[in-house]
Image (tube, rainbow, N blue to C red):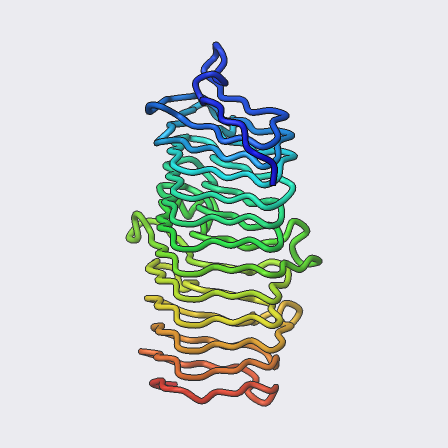
Length: 305
């Protein structure tokens, strides 16, 4: 690895209050003090570490994304606070970006991960009216973060997720190597808005892990995976349902899913894929549809059907 140049954030802020980092290869960019900028834009950069020291990005202009990472790789952001009314962080990097200790307040979508090899950890994303974290690329990890979704008026047909996993082309595409682990997902206003938890209801999810999460949302979909192959869902604690598969036959194409050591109010399993079920604590109801299709279940549960 090349030796990184040291730069100061203040030297890269323009007269309009925007922080632009462009065409920089190998740098550590630091702040000596807490700074406020209107926008952070990173483009055509490689191997850049931005240590914000609570750098604040505040932009309440509609349709302006305050943090954009574009055509860049090996980007690390740490200790940055984003407060916004529009979609907040859009990651279009080539690969290998790492985000830690990021605080995102408000806006519609909190963090949109649209390119492969992205990691979000030890961050706080809350008060979003749409999805807090939107995953639409392979090899993405979200772990050890606090995610609190505000939601919006259900009359508008919106059902925001704490974490939404969906390929760009939806049903025709597959997302692989996704890790969602050790996160706390909650609803800011559970009595008013239909917030969902961790959902992969579009396309196919493959070779992925959803583990060790605590999900406390009012919607039945605490964890929902419609179509999956080689996916492990384990050690999660949810306050409503874990749902595997779909009542729509065209959506249920599951193969080798492991559901183990979870705690849920209800567990619902659809279709005839190979689903290994063991050692789950289901407090109210276990429902299995099409049980002759290769579903194995052997665990601790209360079956009130």
